[in-house]
Image (cartoon, rainbow, N blue to C red; front, side, top):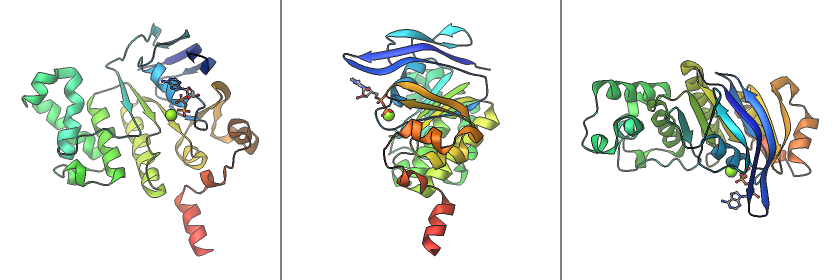
Length: 257
Ligand SMILES: Nc1ncnc2c1ncn2[C@@H]1O[C@H](COP(=O)(O)OP(=O)(O)O)[C@@H](O)[C@H]1O
Ligand SMILES: [Mg+2]
């Protein structure tokens, strides 16, 4: 169980104000998507939540405890699924146990039966059990990102943070990965925060949304509340057309049009 509190969070990089007085509460088990254009502060927010970036002022708390450094109960998934190409999907998933067991034990392959079982279970959760022995380098981008999710699950987290986990994927793979992310979070009861820039994908998979613009929180609400006005508020005048062609339905209707 993990409740996240972001309280007056402000982050400056020199003159740049990346986040300005951002506050919100996420109850345990909620699936939250952070929306915003490039440069709006999404990555900074997630990095502050994971203790990867020092905070200028304000606080992030998990179950009341301030976050000051990366925590073992918080798993992070990045856009560049930094998995190890030479290892199998299974081998990569197993490296998620590294935090628990220490590096030496992991490279010496003293993994416990429990860890091995967990790695297979995590691959099953992301639909890759049949591909467990396949080399990661031979997998598609979407499959590699699913391996990244499996590895995060093997960490046994309570919280999962994902920074644009589908940004480098084609629309079909992006949907699939978001679907697995959501399922994994639900199955494990994780508190989950992902950043996305595609509105349609966000609306399809998100439960609650936080909108950032120029480092400020401009929206915080649930799916029904994400109206066109809200989208304008988050995205401003930029052309959002491309962001709406991200689901299968759209692709299909375009193809048949
Ligand atoms: N390490 C850094 N050093 C200096 N400026 C940064 C750094 N990281 C991010 N920024 C700036 O902070 C702002 C927010 O960036 P970021 O959090 O990466 O936004 P997003 O993830 O939404 O694209 C941008 O103006 C960006 O240029
Ligand atoms: Mg970013």
